[in-house]
Image 1 (tube, rainbow, N blue to C red):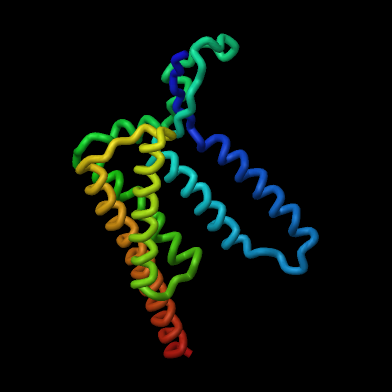
Image 2: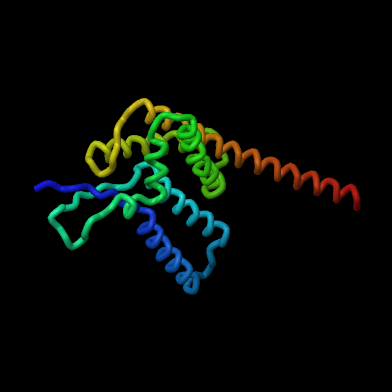
Length: 198
């Protein structure tokens, strides 16, 4: 008996699960001695949602077999299952400058979150985490594609995407570092001016 494969968008389900976790976390504040920092909490949940979207974009969705004889579910059209993340994934799957730019931008927030959320002081440590994370994502993508859980193929585009993903993450790291140094220098100048005025 033949089976057809349906591509599932994980973002809606994962987002609902994340909302439940947020609700439980806020509820637990009533029993904690110290409340969590609102800034850290917002940043953490933003990072988790970003990772959920990143997984969906990089994989294009997970495929599961469906028995075509099962009439209970009815006909499933492409438009019903392909969300915006799937559309973006397949539209950039060919080699183009826009695809490379998109893959660059995709990992800029990753580098930014590393510095802001995990407060990494060392550039080398942050860059090595970016490189390792990109390698893990691409290896997992290949393994999932080989096992049939996602639609995947390996080619030159995957190598270019890996390099561009790393560059995007590294750019995010240096962008935040530069912004922090600039803000710190601006605050020191203001303090010096206030001391001179008094």
